[in-house]
Image (tube, rainbow, N blue to C red; front, side, top):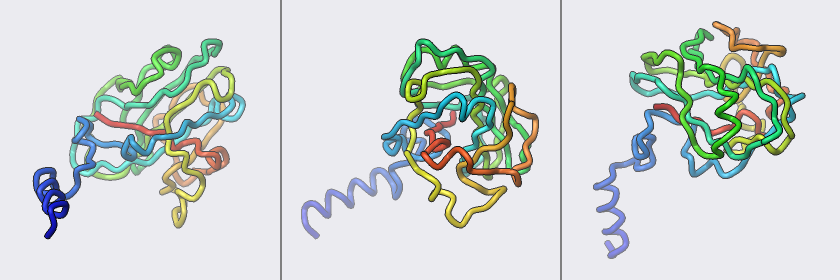
Length: 201
């Protein structure tokens, strides 16, 4: 074994088999490593407003879920936002948590930021969907979120109700208390919308 191999072996022993876990950055879970959020995703207000966007996330152990983190990449000072929310849904489509209106949080601080659920909840292991609902008007490519840039191929071999990135419903002013996940569709995600990075703590 060479010097480099020895150093790598020692690092692996010190860090464990998987050093790229959410816990390494103080998170309980995330949709994917934030290093992969190297793109920004944007949609027109006409294309997104009132639609529920869903991003799948796995929870591997029981956690107290208090916040959803987003990477707010770009601001639109001229935007007019109202009735914007993040929420969490379980595999049965039941809403388990929801934020207050986050419109003001989307108008400042283009950084990674936590947005608190109105009531934290204990999430048992399983699949969940983080829902984003935006309403109002903004300039396309101004209000943007950090994302993976993944397109429609992320749903390869998946079908409703198990799509990784999806959208559903129109004309929503709030996140429903339940969703019929069999109605997932992909009408607005081919350009990468729904591949936003989310963290959980």
